[in-house]
Each structure stands twice: as structure tokens, then as C-alpha cells.
Image (cartoon, rainbow, N blue to C red; front, top):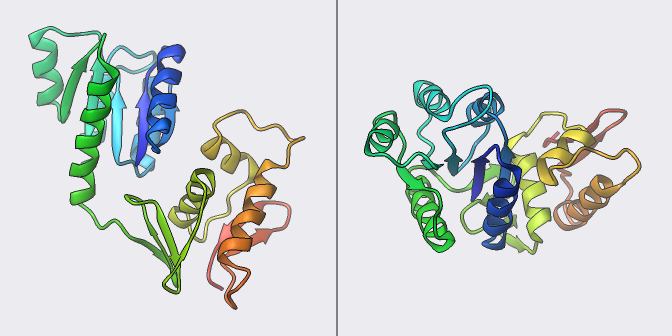
Length: 223
């Protein structure tokens, strides 16, 4: 699943990210309410884990914005605010679940998994570009009906291309989305992974899907 974790305490955010990635989920972190709101409204996540006490904009206001936009992405509030009034407010504003810190990680994972199943049942799971098919739930990829073996990073990069078809993606944008660090212009990690994907999904097919946009980055397109 694609999960947005909104948590301003970076040690906690890293702990959650590593734990979720160990369960084979793709995790993006946001550290303040304004960033979280932009990412939640523009992205396509299966679950959002949302703290309440955030800098710049509190989590309840972020939640109101998400629901006000019409997005139905399941939201798990994860917060130290554990009074009955806090829980009622969060659930009334549109949260799907509420977990108070400190918490057992096994319970957290179980709740995220449950919300993910709910999310998956509400939408078509298969993404398509030409004869390429991706299933975000099983993380399987096929082209012309033939299954393609991908690593977790390769799959994450391919899904990012598919969800942004016909859009130019710069090396910096790709790096920060997939690897989530400030891009080092001295590294060629993006080129390495793009070439790996091309060898797997394009090399044996007449129609090439991943194209280099000279001086700009890469684009997935069918023409």
C-alpha cells in the first residue's frame, strides 16, 4: 500500500516508516500540517496516518480539508491526545480510526492493514498504461499478460511513472519521491533504476513506455 505518515517528531516518523516498509508498504513522510495537506490532496494514498499536534496546521484542520475535498482515503489518527472529547472530535471530523500514543506496534500495523483493505475494496486496484498492468494491492506488474519480476524499489518507481503518465518527472522529483532524501546531483541512482525498468518492461516490446526528455527528466507515454 501507499501510506502517508504525518508526524512532526522525526524519530517517531522514521520508526513508523521503517516498520511499515518492513511490511512491504511504500511510505511517504510529512512533518507539518501544511505539507501534509498538500500531499494528501494531490497524492493517491491507500491510508493516511495523521498526528493532531503538528506545526503550521493542526491535524484536525488537515482532516477537515481532506474530507472537504471529497477524498475518502482512510485516515488513522495517531496522537498523544487521548481524551474522550479528542477521540469524538477526530472521528466526527472524518477519521476512520483513532490510536493513542504510546501504542503497541503490532496493533498499529493491524489497524493500518484493516484500513488498507477497506480502501482497496472501494476502488479498482488495476492501473493500466497501454498493455502494462499494475496491481497496487498485490504489487504485481504485467505487460501483454506476462508477469514482470520487480524489486520493491523498481515497483515503486514504475507505479510512480504510471500514476503520472504523460508528465515529465525530473531526476530530483523522482529521487525525493522514491528515496526521500535531498537529491545529490553527484549520484546516478535514478538513471540506474530507470535503466533497470527499461530492461524489464520495454526491451522486448515494440512500443516503448519510458522516454528520456532531454534536459528535463523522464516521461511515461505510449507515443
